[in-house]
Structures are given as structure tokens and as C-alpha cells.
Length: 117
Image 1 (cartoon, rainbow, N blue to C red):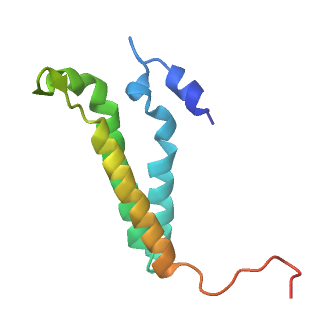
Image 2 (image 1 turned 45 degrees about the vertical axis):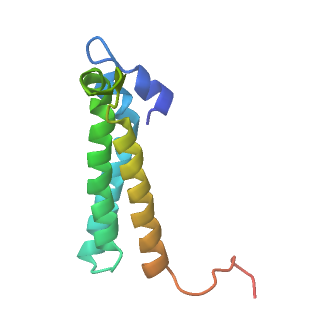
């Protein structure tokens, strides 16, 4: 597996592959596989995790497109808006979704280390 730095150095033409987003690709794939497994087992957190994978894929799309779109998104007074803020907003939503799943459907009770009374 590549580190984020190594993934950013992968070239697909003149710039980094997927605008440097290659290193993030395992995350939505992992969420999708985990979510699908939980969903198939009818675990109540399954839809949260599966939806999180889809949400992260959309978020990653906005991050990937940012450099190409940014120059065309003049907001006002010559400043550009881009899509990078959407990446952060969707990732915050993803974090909320995953934490909600953990709180609502995670293990109940106190977890102790092996051998502890």
C-alpha cells in the first residue's frame, strides 16, 4: 500500500493522478465493503457505514475536481470559490454519520482488557 506522499507523486499525465486523491481511494472502498457486510447481516449500523462510503466517494470527487474547477468559479471581487470547501463539509458530515452509528449501534457496556476482573 502506498503512503499518502507516495500516492500524491503518482503521475497520470502532467499532474498527480486524480489530483492527488489516489491515497484516499481505500477509505470509501473499505467503508463500502464493511457497510455491505453489516447490511447483509442486518446489523443496524450497516446502512450508516454503507451510506458513509457513498458520501465519501462524492466528497472525494469534489476534492479531485477542485483544481480544474477552481479557476472558473469566480465568486466576487476576483476571488475564486472552488470546491475544496465541499470536500471539508462532506467529510464533516461523514464523521457525524460514523460517530452516530457508533453511538447508536456500537457495543453496549464497558469494554475491559483481557484478564481484568
